[in-house]
Image (cartoon, rainbow, N blue to C red):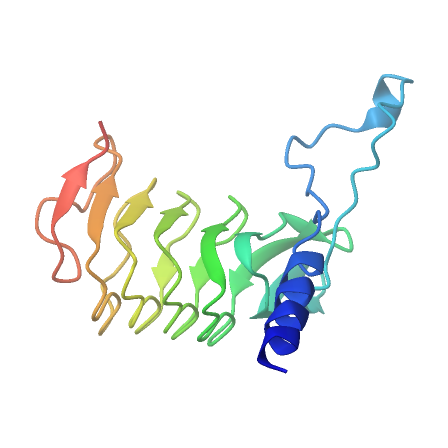
Length: 185
């Protein structure tokens, strides 16, 4: 019985880890060349819940596992915000790609994501909410590509993170959010 249960669980895990659709982040359109590479690039939104507000999109829930890629656009509108609690306690996520269209990361948005090890925050982000990465106990590296956003309470609480920043940006002349910061080499 025990062997059957273990076999069933392993089979479920193996079949559940099939190929995932890839987001075409190059912005290119195959129709421009008149050639079809034979591969269909398709946006898979099954791991996201979102709100479209006029020409802006807010990611309200993220359920993806492994490497999570947040798209730049959904339904023709730019993704500009990651809402409060959007990825809260998503323990299966190991990395996240935040597009350059996002300007705000909400409170507790990645709180408790214990599988998360590294994050790159694009220069477009000007606001990171309270406890945004709190409880990410395996988060070792966060790269900020823009100016330092205003510090918020418990931004990286319990995360053993080192902050890396672009040396051509401003606001990094002191420790940030109680963490060591170093220029990107």
